[in-house]
Length: 153
View 1 (cartoon, rainbow, N blue to C red):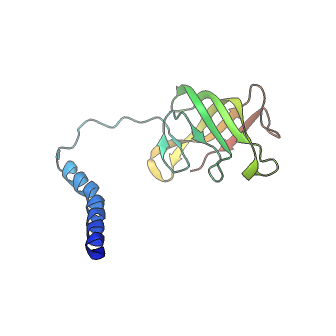
View 2: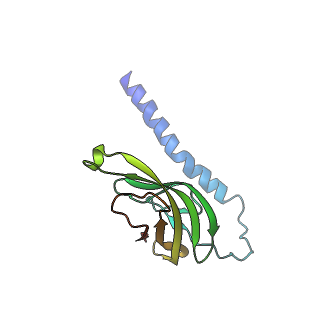
View 3: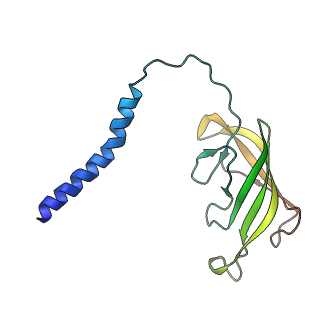
């Protein structure tokens, strides 16, 4: 009985793994005609911790390694070739007495993305290379009113 169960599980897993490949290959052959329209240049993207390009994300992780700082509730007022601006909330762990038991605090923040550059991972895509946070009121301990960080490339 065990042998038949294992054969069934292995067969099911193999079918599940092959299904996307079969679907992709048949979909790829559905329309072999290339598009003739020229590709429009795209605005720069914001690259997240998992190396995904994003445009106008509502949330963005600033501290990829430990998750102790993130932007939430982002509302973008502009997004163009030179810069992007938004307002939102910076949620930051106070790490007191240490990060594993620290408490998260929320701070209103203005966000600006700058320094459009070629994304090294995908040279055909441009990405923002710098993020500036401006705290209009309260801010995390030891933070300046305005802080600027390079973004990963």
